[in-house]
Length: 75
Image (cartoon, rainbow, N blue to C red; front, side):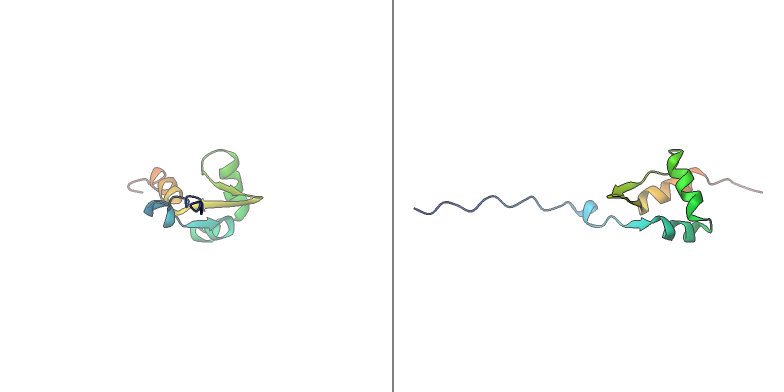
């Protein structure tokens, strides 16, 4: 008698499949600051990151929240 195949892993949800991660260098270029400044923001806990091995990645959602929290009206 054949045994049934092992269960397949669950498919990732749609939100996880569309998560965009940016390298520190890319985030720095978008904000017109140095990569070192981005590292300081991360070290201070102001900008959340995903650590993948030694690499740091910033999600598009976290970057948007970071920018929205720093928006000021007027001059």
